[in-house]
Length: 250
Length: 245
Image (cartoon, rainbow over the protein chains, first blue to last red):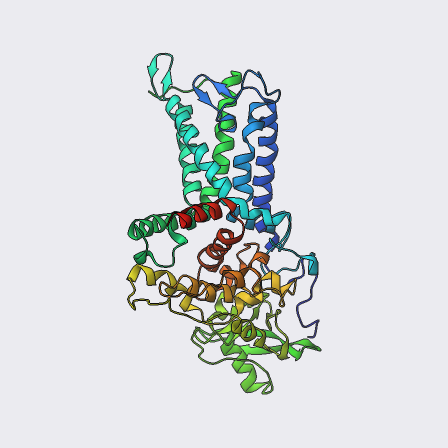
């Protein structure tokens, strides 16, 4: 039997036999769904406080009484976590493959051809700003842990509600996501050529080794924390609107 | 004995056809064994490159059912033998004959990279934890499967501007070497065009030595390029500290 020999070019051209396009679907569904939900919630500007629970989309809460900012308080802050995820090395892979089809999958043809610029020019050269968003994310984590602390206090004193647990799990996942970041791994030790020659080299090596250990699971932390942020906000919204009552555990 | 059909590319850069060959399948057989059977019994002029048959020489790279693989590490029983097994040459390189490709472009890229240069006055002692990191990069067998699957070379044909994952691994091994003193960051940014890499990780997926090419070599190198060219705050901090000395 004879047929065309060398693998042809063009979008989707491949000799692969598996359903390579299936890889794209979970990314499109999860990121697409989250983007729609988060945008709607960010602009809603309501139902973000339920007792001592504060939605992660609105933390830190700035000008909730609209004294100087007319729009939803979330709009003021969401650029930082959004920028952290957009420039994240893991999400870059996911988005380039699933949304830009660049490439759609390994050894599958694409349509950008010679015009491809990668991350050498605008706009994708801005991906190099990832570490600045990381610094912002670390500051946000302080606020989120403070929110978890506040969620331990109810009108009748100390307690634990289902919302407290959800917020603690969410903030833990976000912490793991931030601490497994490739840029952080570089900054805290990876930038060194010789740990043995640097000041506090052993401590930096330990920090880098720990970040490397977490970094192996960066993809999972990225997905789990994305889902948990949405789920936490959704739970708090349900409680805030009175659709459900918070379950008091302790 | 069970049989399988091998559908092999026969031709050169000017074109060719896929030809079918029936081969007996024995337990433990790999695709390279099947190709050798074809060469030994049906097509003595079949062009293919191989050497060790043990996954260490990196010679027998090809595309099996569209996936870049070492044919000596691809077991026949891992494939669906109810359909013909397609074997094609690596797409990113010019075909010399049948499955043998001209990978000499890689050696030209390699020449651009300054070799190991010890730091001035260096003490020839290394700590184990310093060596561990670069050991991973020494596992590379230069099969060039990562170069073949990288879309910057495969689809965008940026061979003039881009070095490719194999050479980022080599540069990582040198740049992170505890005794090396050469600066290859400008080379990475310009001549090797690391900015073209958009982290899609196909190189890591196909590496037969399971080197974490993207996470351990390319991304750390990209971060070093950021240190040097895209982080104004770090530049100011460095200036302040160097002025204070």
